[in-house]
Image (tube, rainbow, N blue to C red; front, side):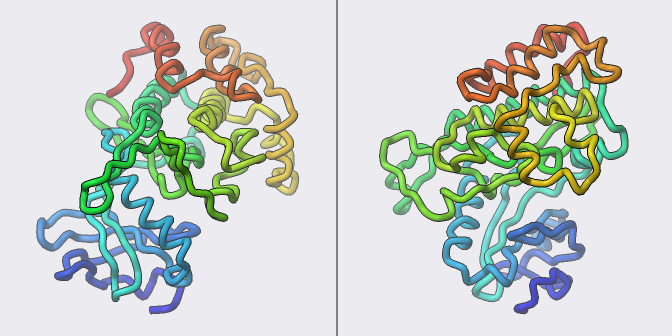
Length: 320
């Protein structure tokens, strides 16, 4: 099964003993394929992510994959996709099992609607803040047979609409953050390890913070707040703060986004078409997220969330 295509995996059973039957490919990313599977032991549907065959023997990528599993298990929040199980298929292909989510990504919603109402956008961001607060506050990983605790703060580094999942419920949309697979761990102690992978750029240029484009090492949680600001702005206006989406697709290059994040002033939100009704307070919160320097932004997602509560009360009740 050396082919990078997900097709050969269909109908395979993974686990020891074989427990997960792969029924359908849900999507493929740079490092793994995601499948809809049936948990034959419990009779429920789950999602399974398998490291791509072409990468399975690459040591650094295997380490990253294992870290993704460990971090995902440790991140316990109703607003972060939950990991259920993990293993190795055919003795060489790592996989892990997640809860199966039914709904749509924020990118799919925006592709259909173009922009969201103030109350829907605020409700999504408040829930994103709740999930990110768990990661930014820090989790504990246990090593050496659970005798050594390693406290770790986590930044996502690739927040974007495609990594935000919306689940319809009777009380409103429940938001889940996907793919902490390229998250950067920040040891709360002073001892750290640098590798070529941790220093390389990981993320999406369109939503990346200016400092993320300069150095993958000198980052903290305020990089996620910048990405969150880009998403917030897009939800409310249907476009980006720099006018790049208004140009032809050939001009929406990675270099264009990098230059905009580094040097272009974002257009005030209320100056976008049909955004005049947005409150001054909400505009100020969004624009503060987009500060070029980390010190100009909110110091934490908790501070951002708290700034939105008065706005949400005036707009609508926030969904859980």
